[in-house]
Length: 350
Image (cartoon, rainbow, N blue to C red; front, side, top):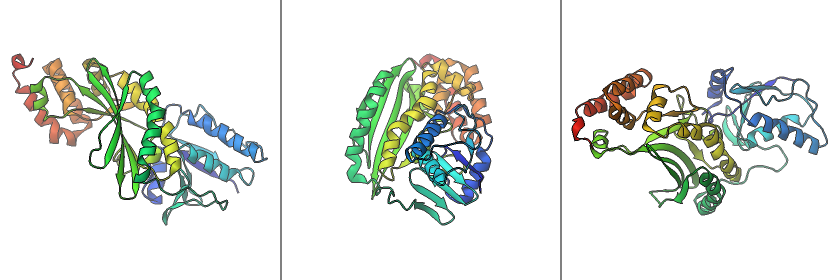
């Protein structure tokens, strides 16, 4: 019996019930073109041919121009097609939702059912290797640093390794721009028997001391993607939004995916946004026109500081935009900082 399964790239839901809600949320939502649809098409055809069962698509083959968050694909073909499709998709960091069988296949070799998350067993002895742990951190760091350094340097970033802070060691990429510094920090945390990664991209504006003090000493304006392409495979969905960009490196395949997945996230969502936010005016434009870029600037007291430096009318516009889009944050922080900035004597700020 043939039926449609649904493929997507999104942080992992906490339960199969949440997966059903996620499918409803993602269905028919427009999305920029993703290179992964072509890669999935090519990988499926290559694996099927290697197994001696060349793929003959019953309906249309996977469309590389598909521009929605989910891809509905007919789960039909030779007997080995379902396994090939699932293995090919999850190796790319995609999830495959089989609502008929009540199973969400996750990256890389895991499945979510009503009983929870378990490793996949196809009966061929190819179950994932054990979890990556703290003992492997140095090897993971060295491998990532070697793979990423040339790419960062080609973009004008210097890459350095940070010191151990609590349980984390970071690789930090930085470049100077007119507004200050742009930073991408990838942290590797070792806790108990697990190794995790997290990614924080940010703009660190240069500001007069008095202005920074009015903002409570905050140092950065965080930049996040909207779809988390490349990093979604590592993340958990907390409901409204993922708690952080990154997550547990469950096994060696996760490290393999991280090598490519980081720059999928950066290339698709973060770097275009950073490239468009090199000056103070650029940053303010991004705040006042939040839907123009693939990434978004998180609410920050420093954005209000840049707005104040641009003039009282710009501060008012930025405060109004924050109150409209982030009312809770505006009440907790925005209003206080706005008042503190208004109280600063402009002539005393160098």
